[in-house]
Length: 356
Image 1 (cartoon, rainbow, N blue to C red):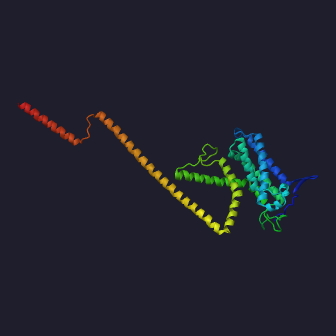
Image 2 (tube, rainbow, N blue to C red):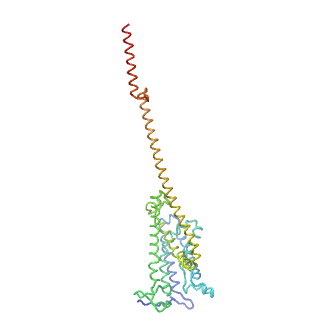
Image 3 (cartoon, rainbow, N blue to C red):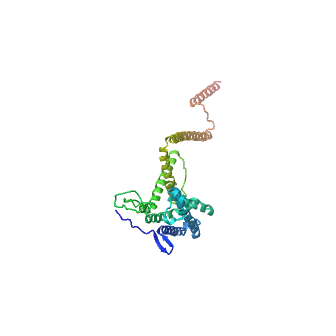
């Protein structure tokens, strides 16, 4: 078992002014993100896209406000609203800890959306630029949680367990340290790979099975068969993170509530039943459309073949009539019989003339 270091949450005291480690971690996170963003904006590709140092400073200022305001508001609303309603002044004491990742992420997205509209840039382009700045922020944020002794993990008897001051007498997982190393980079990599793989499978099935190309990334850098590309993989990673942290917990809470309210669950089950029937019917309809398209393709090919044969036959007939202008549609044996009769008649006529 490891020993919790019991770090003083106050890093520096200057008379009545106290600088907390939690606040410093946010400062380090913003500095790391700002340095990385400045470096990205200096790359030729981003310069060509209209990015520069001034735009980076402006964007990160709004993102900083979104993180702090959204994270704090999210924590107040989602975790301990009654206590903060009883003591509203505690809402502004951010140095005591209490920031919600869900609220911070929502604040960043709203700030980025507002800034992209103001600067007349595509929101996905802004998200693409900001995405690599997130892991360093998560890293320093989780270190701040560890120093504050909050957000510890479950009880464990393993070698990595720690007894936290606010976590009771039993050792717990230092989940803040796990998340500092894994929540940022690994989370985004896994989500990006999973969603990219799903996108590739859907693209292949729709194109190979139904001859439909639902999207085309052929003009995007690093694309594979025009079905996936790094740019949209990053976008999927952010959307996956938003679902995992914002939507998925609500779904679990709703499922728990439905399990305790069976009557309402029955109504929801009816809706899902209708949805399932619609999916089955749509699948059958797509199969029928595909079958009809295949049959029409065969018919079209057959008609084209008939037209080609007819064209060749007509050209051959024209060539034959050029060489044999007296060509007839009558059988050859009739021509021969008529020719023999004509010759015999001429012979008889000639014999009579000689006899006279």
